[in-house]
Image (cartoon, rainbow, N blue to C red; front, side, top):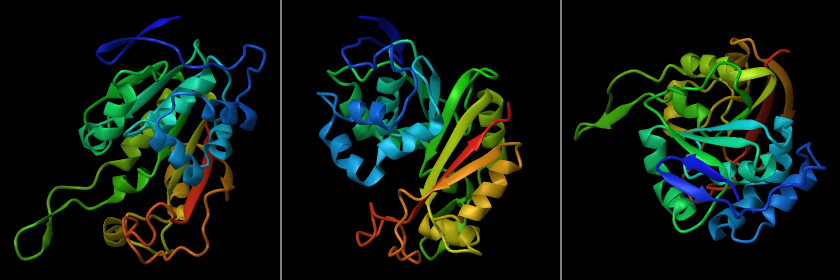
Length: 262
């Protein structure tokens, strides 16, 4: 048993950790974590569409590593990551107020009367990551990078009008780069948008161009490693908002892996 400060809680761990003899986190490690007894039913149901055994190994983690789940909302990936990095590792479940509110039901289920592992609830203001320089071995952001390019609007009774400015995506990405160790990986997953989509389209559909995201991240010095097809769906209608029930949960999603140069 091990004690860890987690938000406002002290938690005793009962989750199954990987063997010290299998340090590298590969597909088999993740599949074993997915079989942990006591996982939330909603998480198990999500496995089918999120395919974490094909995603988490892209981070090239080892047991004992430190990982940040950026805008991790309800913490689906955080709990799996906590299992695979083991009792000597640590997962920062990062949120701001908006993403925490979006995932509040999942967070309540995850942290009430159960022990999800060595997860630190790392809620910060706005786009702040608040992580030390070169302290993180891997970073993940899922279905949230597009939100950095959404135009904030409010309905005034007649039409939607812009209120305030878009988020500073480059500031967020600079912090990711700052916090990663050399050789650390950054995996980005999001709903694929059509080429030549502008910010209005991103705001309306919550989809974003893969090529645009890649260029934005490379601007910060990240080296592009790969694009993975495990979450692609060629039958997805990219003209539909991702919350439409006809496409919800089965959109065409790109998976990009980057590395901070060694």
